[in-house]
Length: 280
Image (cartoon, rainbow, N blue to C red; front, top):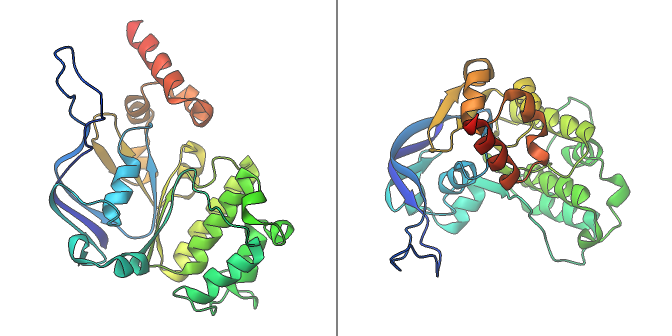
């Protein structure tokens, strides 16, 4: 069943101020989607592909955080151009890459506030079938007990990422979009968190779209994969259907053997490796 529909969508970013060609004319902003139509499913969906291939833009458009220049987008049957900000926030929540909050509130107080004031109203069962409630379970899975008395802006990057991911689950929207939510966490924490996201998705009926560079975790847990290419084409299917060696190398422009290190490489490093390979 589809929960997101793009119909004849065109989206380009505005020109960068002062970015001109050799004739002094402004260079047009990058076009990400050009008359693009497709339907996207519910479930646990992983977005895979190199930086600047359109993953973040797709999620922002799908959730109505930015509007297409042309065409229509529906989420959960609603036209994003007709939704109020309140409707958008009730339908979809976002975890942005490098998201931070400037607050002196303690982590424990913030978790309680989000849980009590979101759609779940402080009343949701744990997804693992135990008698504990969702708040207690989320604290345990995301390893937050040691930071509950910390001010959020005094936590480490990895701790803050896990707290923010916890916010998104405790708030209780129908869809959650996550853009590289755990890149600063340890490998074991990433696996534990992504596994739980899938369990949460199945147990609650929530749809989660998550962008991450961890190829092995995507193969292990994804229901559906969206593989993005540098020309903004997208392949949609199961991990086995979409994540072939040939397709991944075409998407990233580097050998599959190097993709395990891609998450620690800068965009410039990946481009340098890709350019070097093309010259061989």
